[in-house]
Length: 201
Image (cartoon, rainbow, N blue to C red; front, top):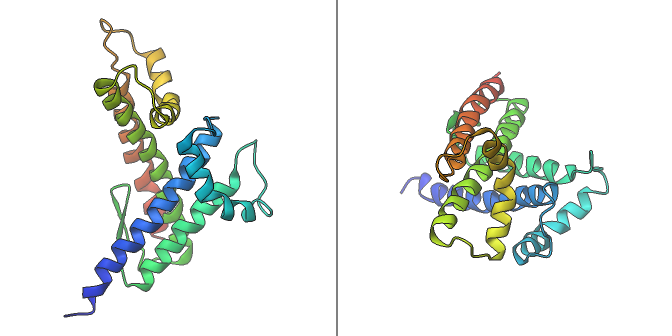
């Protein structure tokens, strides 16, 4: 067996662990920014897992306009560390928002640009998934409430509410999720490739 026999499982484990924790920090930032219910059990779970490192970072990184900038810096540090570890594992290319990024051949500055692109792509993906989940939940359990539904609604509202103000009513049919999904997909297609391209220099 070649040396790649153990590399692929190691990359999978590394990606999964990093991505799950980065997602938790992003969700914490969004829930705090959107003033979600922090007494929600899901919110409490996220807070417990992300508070220790953020408490340390907040000693050096002040909030900006009332937002938890330490959470954003922590996400960038985690993503950059993940990319560096993947370089050590001789992974030449990764996908960032559907765009292939050559992490194995760029400079550290380029890797930092890829880090920013990956974080932006993650934010757009979180909004996109929240919109899709809310649509599915409205079909299978309309009117019901649980802690997860409340948080999903809180995350998707900044995307869906402006769409509902713009779009006319079609006989009671809410088309805002369709257009919101389309807008998020187009945003990802327009925003991520130029940033990844910039990182190649």
